[in-house]
Image 1 (cartoon, helix red, strand yellow):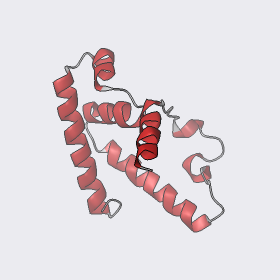
Image 2 (spheres, one colour):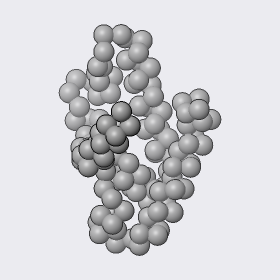
Image 3 (cartoon, helix red, strand yellow):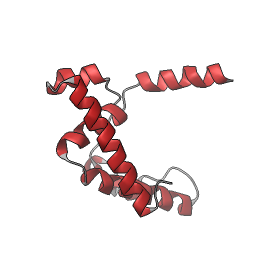
Amino acid sequence: MYNLFIDERRRFARRRLHTVEEGRLPGDGLAGFASTQDPARDNERREKFLMLDAALSRLSDEQRLVVLLHDTEGYKLNEIHELTGVPVGTIKSRLHRARARLREILTRSGTFF
């Protein structure tokens, strides 16, 4: 069971996620992003997306870029270095500080425990 989890995690890490601007989503943006038949659960999920978006907007541009490229898009540190020209050590520290700041913001809002 553990090996199945590890294999799936590795497969997921190799996949590229494609981001879409909210204005390009069909319907009414994030509000129309329902996936289940439970409206309360859909609303809670939508609220968490909005809180995460607000928390990301509070990061500096450099930190936001690194977090989005690494954690959302799945780029490796060396790939981010090639894209931005920033040294890998600087990317690592920005990523660490950005995650800590996000954790702090989301803990205060009650989204992250």
